[in-house]
Length: 97
Image (cartoon, rainbow, N blue to C red; front, side, top):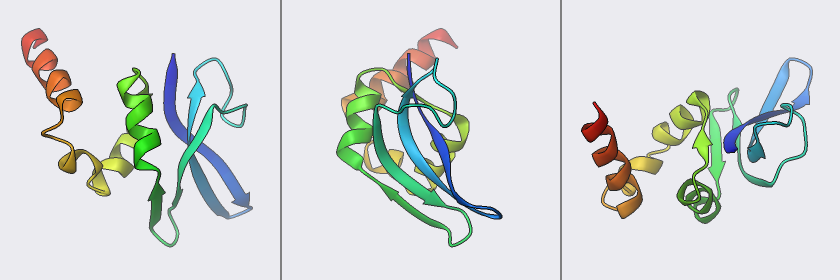
């Protein structure tokens, strides 16, 4: 299973995180499949490669809670709420719940 999660970079007391697509069996700093963005919590900057993130989400990748929050703050899901991917996911959750 593939997850979108944060990979810590930067120096001591000055962390910068890469948003990566990574197999769940690899450790946090392990080999990633692809870098899809970065997050700088100190300067509050975010960069995301939207086509790459969409590709992995459509293939079934699960974002971690923190990555999901970062993407939500960047209004990633708001723009795509009318797309079939997110609508299918919302409908499935309504049927289960």
